[in-house]
Image 1 (tube, rainbow, N blue to C red):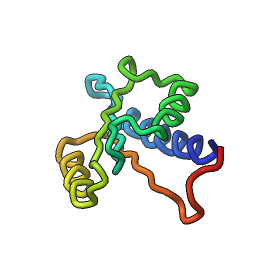
Image 2: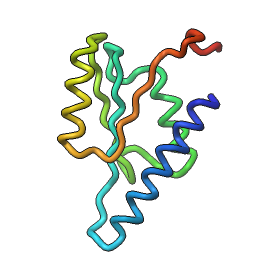
Image 3: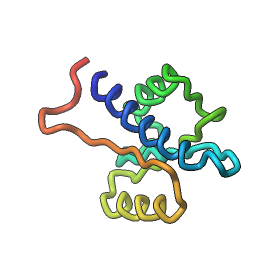
Image 4: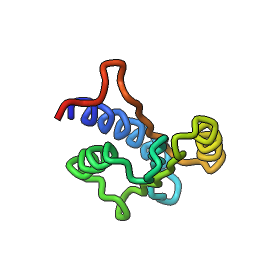
Length: 106
């Protein structure tokens, strides 16, 4: 859970900087892309991330948009998706992987 809180804090810092830079422009809802190798678009680990954002006042569909991109365990597809997300201009790309120490303990 500490990693999720750290990741949420990092993303929120980036979003705050983006929002401050866009203060003079018409308000746009920040877009986060959650990019994963998992076959399912809403990986189990993304739920903690979304909950962390919610606890900080960011609600998916209200003041933030989260797009889920799965690559079906295909590393080449993961690279293609990352390049596409950059072209689409999402504000933040979030991804994760298994640590060298194995999966998180529950």
